[in-house]
Amino acid sequence: MNLTWNWLTLRVRDLEASIAFYNGVLGLPVDRRFESRGRLIAMLGTAEQPKIELIQGGDVNVRPGSGISVGFEVESLDAAMAELADRGIPIARGPVSPNPRLRFLYVLDPDGFEVQLAQHL
Image 1 (cartoon, rainbow, N blue to C red):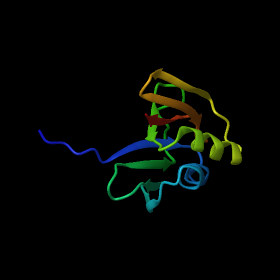
Image 2: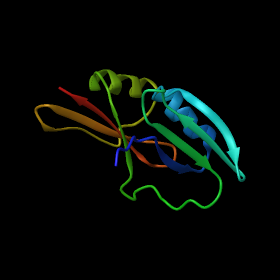
Image 3: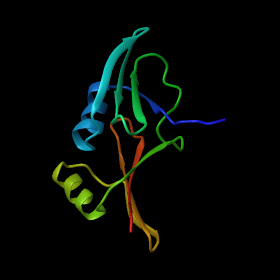
């Protein structure tokens, strides 16, 4: 079986707040927005990467704190921390350096999902 990862779905309470975070803070471009079966949906990410699918509406089966996190690579964790501070986004955990080649931290999205920003050294 040859698989290609396409997207990760997060069920959110407020689509606009989530788009403001993933697009406005993290810089993921909005690929498309649409409605399906009474649910508002936005796909974020570039053509070269898997997307984050945000869905507002319907039953929310996965709750924050359930072990789900979204991870992104950054060139400079220090620069990312400065930008987060400028935007008033608190760091939830970290920075942590579990080995000499990796440093990361976590912030929370508007629904409380953990977002990891990692720098490989």
